[in-house]
Image (cartoon, rainbow, N blue to C red):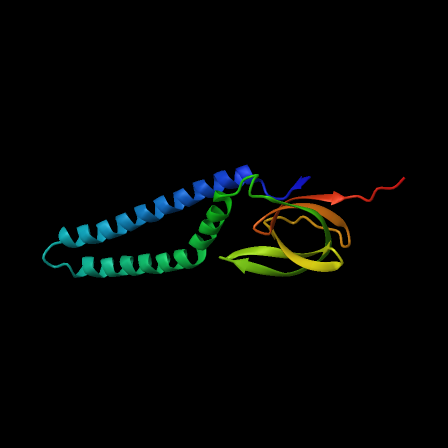
Length: 166
């Protein structure tokens, strides 16, 4: 089976990245707030320059925090929440899916997923299932059958099923 997502590496890196981001944002917040308060408390009687400096630094800090929590932190949190609960028991094994085509990409929490359509038969009915590929350029061959392992409809592993011939 071809592994599209390395679970153990993903768990380690996403957890480490999440903790580092939380620590760095906390340290930055403490330094900016503490520096602003200390600058005003330790200033001389004429504190106009300290006040202007504090306003500029605090405005830049607020702009950075808005940018960070809108653009960067959702990505870090998405990877952390995705890999936090993944294990071999949670992975769904799909036996026989036929690749149909790739459709437009979707974005969840600023993370772009490739959307692939697979078809499968249950009884006499044929169904189409949308599955996602995360951070991988693996190419599937149209009208080929695959055995897939998925987690939350994200393809973790794939194996091409070859037709038996004598």
